[in-house]
Image (cartoon, rainbow, N blue to C red; front, side, top):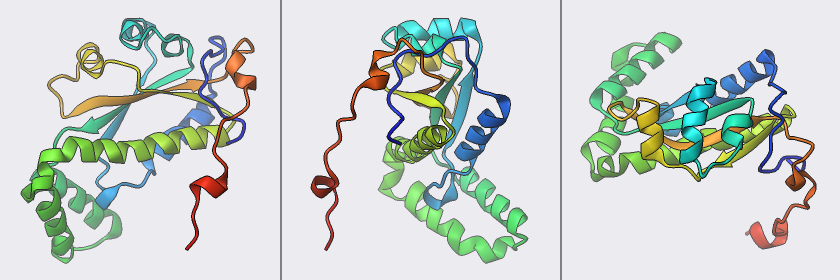
Length: 204
């Protein structure tokens, strides 16, 4: 974690090896979420033309086109009864349980996210969940010696339009550029500016 930083310049000639990238994809898949609902999708954009189209809508940040793997993290726009049914069915199949045994859990999801007023802020809730996956991706990348840059400086509506997401169930919320730092990135050698633990962590 001391080595990682928000990489500004990537080495465009160096790609993440397939086994390491597979490990990062599994880190995304295994990320925890509220109720286990996984209200997200992860779009890995490798097409150079798509990346070039996205860059002007990303404050023209070079990471978008120069990184090895560009991940657009998508949050679900709504949670429906069908989503709850699908997830509970997956639990039953994976753990060899009866659906009737999971009805109480199914009702918890229904009441909290579908029936109650929280349904009106599902996009915010899903985005909060998505950031767990986002942090997990960056941390696991650091552990594997892979550099990342968190990108919130982009236009979600334009990303949705370019990526064909406008009418879909998921929308772009945050972007993560992954790869290896360039030797010319001056930010790589800057000291970290972190408040000491004594100012951030309290014990009672």
